[in-house]
Image 1: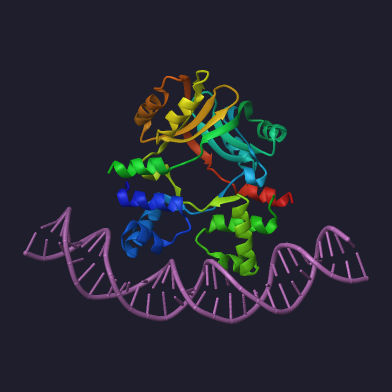
Image 2: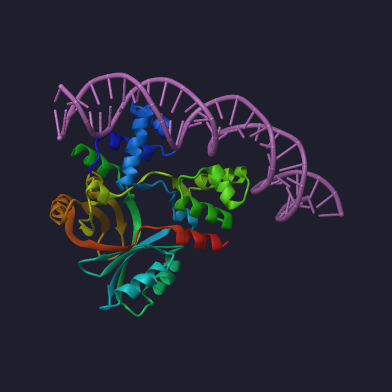
Amino acid sequence: MGIDALDGRLITLLDQEPRIGVLEASRRLGVARGTVQARLDRLRANGVIRGFGPQVDPAALGYPVTAFATLEIRQGQGADVRAHLAGVPEVLELHTTTGEGDMLCRLVARSNADLQRVIDRVVGFDGIVRAATAIVMENPVPLRIIPLVEQAARDT
Amino acid sequence: MGIDALDGRLITLLDQEPRIGVLEASRRLGVARGTVQARLDRLRANGVIRGFGPQVDPAALGYPVTAFATLEIRQGQGADVRAHLAGVPEVLELHTTTGEGDMLCRLVARSNADLQRVIDRVVGFDGIVRAATAIVMENPVPLRIIPLVEQAARDT
DNA sequence: GCCATCACTGGGCACTGTGTCCAGCGAAAA
DNA sequence: TTTTCGCTGGACACAGTGCCCAGTGATGGC
């Protein structure tokens, strides 16, 4: 477990220019192609790199509004609520949490007006007692991982 | 703007098997290679597909604990707080929101004990008045986009 | 009804990258 | 000291890419 400096540089490079292949990456990093291939195989085997799927922007799909909803669940209804929320396309992720509510989910919608429809669909389910919604205005730090990768590479 | 059924199938295919190339994708979809190439170029140009960067798992990097923190900010300190949080590697994303708090951020840590250190670092800043943290226990719906892509493709 | 536009097709081309070998070498562990 | 392991640098056949082209069918403007 853990990654070294070369792993960190490789991940950072692939994050900045995902289209480059193994050969070009080996040239940029100054190591043999086989080394990059082996590192990549190991990173995928260890689960550090889950894949290279397309990163789709919901806004470009017509869903520019993002919100987070904190849900309070009736005791014992967890599984049902999970299944219900998993069936709503506008629910992009769902977590069960400690603290205020019982669940936290990320929603998107076509507009602020459309968000009402989404929320109605989300909370219109028997097991959900209460919901508090926070609409996202700005996103100063978009989902990122590189700073953490660099720290993990340094701590080795 | 908007995507059609072929775009939807292409994105879904690339999400399931990111390693396949344009040629193989064209075979799976039953269209000419040039068509897939043109669709991909258009999706990237429209910003629907942002890229194909590596999806890194923080847990595999040694950060298995995730939490969400709601922050209340002192008036006029927004910019400073943003800059401060952007400098913390464990802050994976940051949003400004309506509702309860002023900001919502996603954190990771090496352990529950380590989370205390991260939170101290996050809230140990003058502009932050109050912070409420929710630790993630389960993640029944991991960050996903395909159901939304399929809905967007259907609505065309 | 006619013509221009546009996306898709199917083909061809040179070139690059990939997957997969291998032998040699230096460092670290046994 | 000897084994083990990761990295190197080279080789090979093959597949895929980027880029070109002419032909075709559908759509929309005139």
